[in-house]
Amino acid sequence: MENFFKLKEHGTTVRTEVLAGLTTFMTMAYILAVNPHILSASGMDAGAVFTATAVASAIAGVLMAVFANLPIALSAAMGLNAFFAYTVCGQMGYPWQLALTAVFCEGVLFILMSLTNIREALFNAIPMSLKSAVSVGIGLFIAFIGFQNAHIVVAGPKLVSMFSFTSSFTAGTFHSEGVAVILALIGILVTAVLIVKNIRGNILLGILATWILGIFCELAGVYVPDPANGFFSVIPNGIVALPVSLAPTFMQLDFSFVRSLDFVVVMLAFLFVDLFDTLGTLTGCAARGNMLDRNGRLPRIRGALMADACGTTIGACLGTSTVSSYVESSAGIVAGGRTGLTTMVVSGLFLLALFFSPLFLSIPAFATAPALIIVGFLMMQQVVKIPWANLIEAIPAFICITVMPFMYSISEGIAYGIISYTVLHLCAGRTKDITWLMYLLTAIFISKYAWM
Image 1: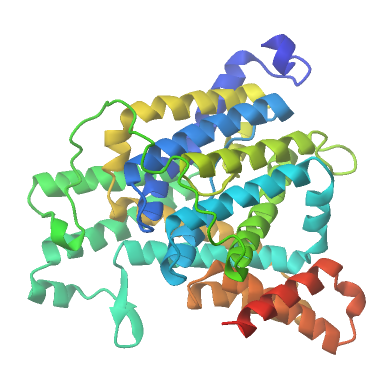
Image 2: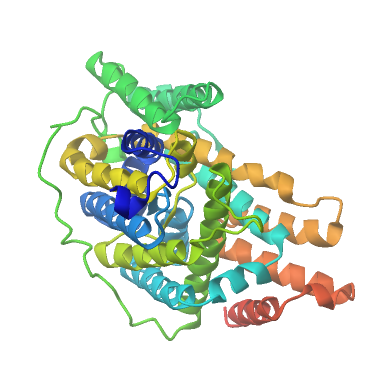
């Protein structure tokens, strides 16, 4: 391990790296409960998604350790899984097989880009205000989905409204839907308290606390399962089991739509959100561990980008949405992780989790919804990086942010943000601020709307 990971050179030890890996896994293990819930909304088998998520995360982590020797773990990206399930498969009506194909193609493109400097060049071609806006908009979108999954926000006469406890008593659904809403609200507060107190694994612990409270409520007869309306028993039917088969999702790619303009738009949306998220995460985590050089660059970034790209491609083949570097890796870095050994430990724990699928798959939506809402809050923090006093930058950012939750589409938010940015800068005579990529993307998105 010393020869491969160069532990002494990085000022760390095996013990420190193992503890850092455990810390990172604790902070990101919530994805094993959340991702199956989200992707199953597209019609995918939740058990197969769980296995695909764990295996893809493990493989991508090993690749990160081998290619870059960095303590940065990877898994299915929050936000992109929501785009996959609720926009591509939900709003646009495409089968999940096509969405997996778009993820696969995105991964292949990233592999090609990672062999050169194209990926960094593309990242630099997008204005910083829109990069921040994409993160903020996805945060709002994820939080909205969390409120919906918890039934805190429901359909109403004004499109959406707050859940009514009075109506649930009248309809006789209080002990199923009503109690689930209360438990979700408690879960949000519990998770928030854990974050404020800076407790490691706060999001995962929040999920577990809400779930355990739900188990007590079911045992006491306060929560009554109603499978017909989507409220299932929260008591697991086992703890340890053999890994769930990948068969329902493995290599389920559909290339029949590849030549359509919608497919290109979907793939570009996956590609650019992943691009911003990955490079931002790598830079932020590396800065947290003082791993950047004097010019503020990550020395082994090409290997890290290659691991990320390969993880996405492999994940699509297995049956999960875009795999990306996780900002939660900063928790392990703070704990002392400095090499790929940390990531190898995380990968080992993801593989171990495969044998505990009955536990993860029995976690109810009201327990995972608080995690979505809190992750939305964390992504919202990028809003301070938008120059609100500079109207020509702020207005497109605002449009990008608001379109995502209001139109229930991440890709529409990106499209409207890019189009408005290009048009406003052209009208203001600020053409020097518009890169060739912005012109190209604007033309693509306008063509898409012209054909709608």
